[in-house]
Length: 88
Image (cartoon, rainbow, N blue to C red; front, side, top):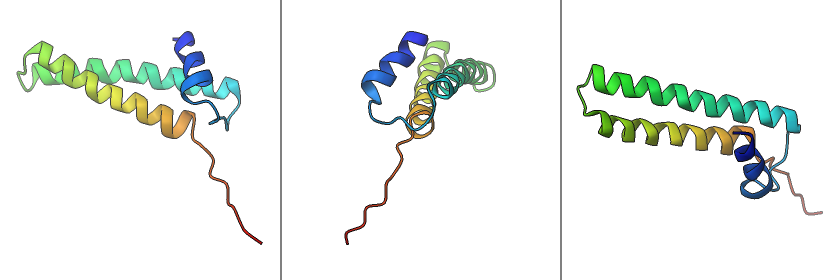
């Protein structure tokens, strides 16, 4: 998990630094672990309550958790600051 953070930090989101390194590590880990929780919870709900085949449920839960992880990482952990440009 830590290696994924450093790959994202140095390659995927290079130039998006607006928080301290420690803060980004904590937020990234929180996002990743919440993705595991989302996957597990959705899998149980899809199989138990909606009687969807478990492999189909796993794919659906994985897609939704992946969207969560991407959104959280892109728009919160490495949120790019918008600078105001004025022409004088």
